[in-house]
Image 1: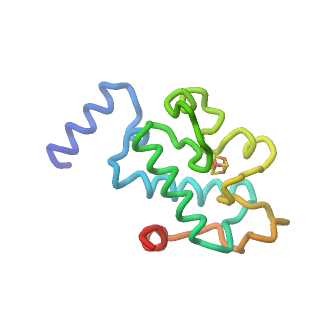
Image 2: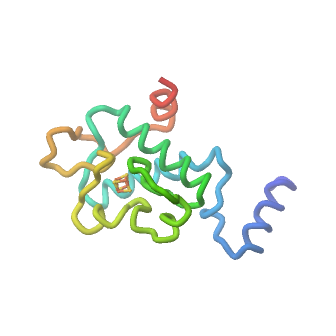
Image 3: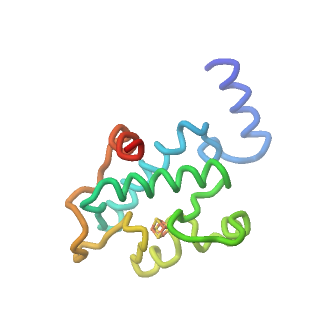
Length: 133
Ligand code: SF4
């Protein structure tokens, strides 16, 4: 492990936060992507047939994770994003998703949704190129 990585690791432990909670910015998109794949499989939901939708939502979640420390839903307007993260209602997976499998971002679509595809996977390369347009 490099000196930089060692000191980052030490800082995370000093803060009392698990390392996973404080990834480097470049890692957040991958953390969110992996979470989404795992969560889709666990809940029997699927990604959108338009992979651009999936990519934009993943990128928005990763950006919120970097900026706010929590994966706040990127498809809503908030007066106070920090307060919303603290409330946790709209932290992904949000309460409507956890309780009723309702994802208004179209990241997780139920089997009967006409906009779903058959996939619960998306590569990091695809996400990056789709977001880059
Ligand atoms: S609607 Fe809920 S489950 Fe869907 S991306 Fe937003 S926070 Fe996540």
